[in-house]
Length: 380
Image (cartoon, rainbow, N blue to C red; front, side):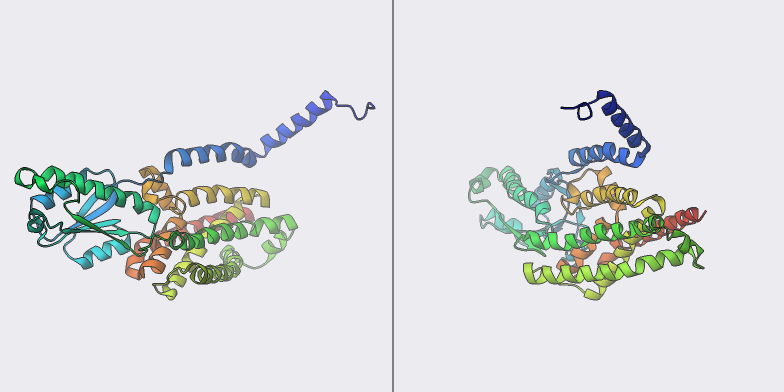
């Protein structure tokens, strides 16, 4: 081996020091190396929970009595169910399930008390919002054990012979909106939001930085256009791209997986317009802040990671701690998942999806204002 090919520790150290200096100067890359593992550790360690508890539950007690009150008390003491109130009619229960205010509705029918005393195994109805089968499955399984525990404790004295098997009550579970618990019904509409988030943010995140790197930014600044016109002009073509993606996803989901289309496609189109706009304005904001395309991509990754993990797409939203749910409520993907699943699986209308629409509108306005402010700074 000649001298030029031998390893020189001094040259090696010089290259290594140069690399460290460059790494230190590129603060965004350095932050990504440190913060992304930390962010993943916090999210997977503290926020992600595949066994959600404390799910909002309503009761419809059509006949009050000691057994019905014992059942309600048992639900209150259960870790899987969180009592949020009572409903008087089936229509009211239907509305709360459609909007997502309640995950379960337990109905105690007329004649329940007398039938139980006679040993006739009266039926109890447990309606579950099964649009996300993983979120409801463990609670449904726990409901059977809860009923046995509650009624075995109440059946004393002359009624003690009714304890044990078969169960004193017939618990009938109705899984609403997804009776067979097909996971594709939950995943495919969710994928629509995830794909739109990733593609729309990335494409517009490169919009201004690409102009800067190609040397065409001066031409853009010299044009007699206002920042709002630049932003709208850059994001409008991508709205069309987003709709093309949605058509492909919806058609594939329908024909390949049999995903139902219960609601209005017109209403879905309106919701899509707002959701696509929210992602495009975020990407445009990144584009005005980043100095090059690599930084724009890195900023986009910082948006993707919490947005997808805390939205309820991969893991049950109600299984997360409260602080993680508050963070998740900031991202438009969280609300869009509820909107698209509500329209496709439940047939929801504007009245049901409006509570999820206005946060998306607020996000669009806030990110657009921030993008305009940053673009003016770029002009300076």
